[in-house]
Length: 130
Length: 102
Image (cartoon, rainbow over all chains, first blue to last red; front, side, top):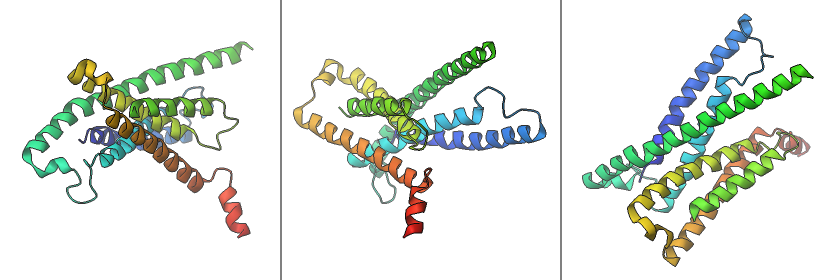
């Protein structure tokens, strides 16, 4: 019904955090607190991955909802908003399916970050030995 | 069916990203988009399975055909988003060069 809205909302929040973090990282490099050559993946880059996963998924799922006639190009854009009963069902779906989607994507991203950090660490250790 | 088609698209996009020579084709966005959608449809499928049980695996032929069309349309939309983004960002400068030649 509108489960993709939860991921889209998380993507918006992540985008704000990513922008703030990117500015902080650039300032740290400019102030000399952090070197650009430090071998680690910046948090802003990791947040960009999460944002792409959330937003990409939300856009394709929104298309599915358009396909099924649940999202329309006129106000209020969601057909479920036409009656209180449908709206309640929609909010229930957002709270269950939508939240689970956002949580699973965030969990997959978390695992991805741990694995990526391990790969970078292993590669830099191999470079130091060579 | 939509989930299956999107997962295959995600695997192919990831393979192409892994075997790329450089980043000029910007395949990363396609990889994230298809995997993001696959994860979301997986959750949808789990909830549907919990509701329908074994019936989930025996859909009506008409529903399957509709889902297959939807899956292909989703893959096409992902490719359109990727190609439009690629042409706008123009990392190889091909569009700029073509426009200058005009």
